Length: 279
Image 1 (cartoon, helix red, strand yellow):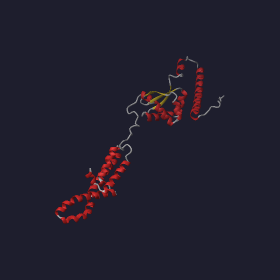
Image 2: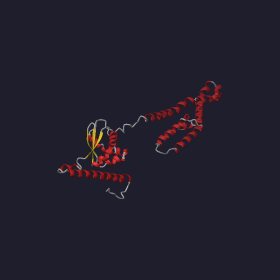
Image 3: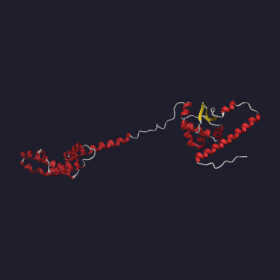
């Protein structure tokens, strides 16, 4: 160790002390202390990797030590060759050049190549297949009924009136290659549905959600309260039938008005102040 210590000059010792001081000061964080100590020792032993004034002085001292070692052998052969120590500055300029180039430039190139390759891998990652949730094969009546809530939400985004008519218990009753029958709760809702052009709105919504293009036909639900009394009622006279038709028309008008008032109250927050009856 004494021989190794004797090989260090003042410049090398000063540089080694500065390197160790900087390394110990930066010894913090999650980096392993052993790794930092190894890096400190590597910097102390490789002055050629620094372009600072300390690194240049360390390299000059190393070259001078090499010249001092080679000096006795040359003095034995020719005693006059002792003053040749003056041209030592020439190899000092030439010797560091081949050593500094590979040690300094090799690691940054590897890091740059890794940093350039990382963003190239990222762009191909695309998630365009996620929105494709529509069924690819033919869909049956049960499939349309399962997707009925989504169809109603699509209709709501298109027209609120159509949504209010079909959201209260409407359902797909039957379906074939051309027509899709939608059952409503009563005849008033059915007439309002057909007069307002809601069948076309529902047709476009079914095309968007399900992918089927069918003509929409609105029917009254046969399981409702309107179907059973008519089938069980006895035969009546012509006058009674006329009065019943008139009552049904009045009920339809009242139901349509009531549904309109409920629609205004639900959608716009309107409030019924009073009602007027036509004489």
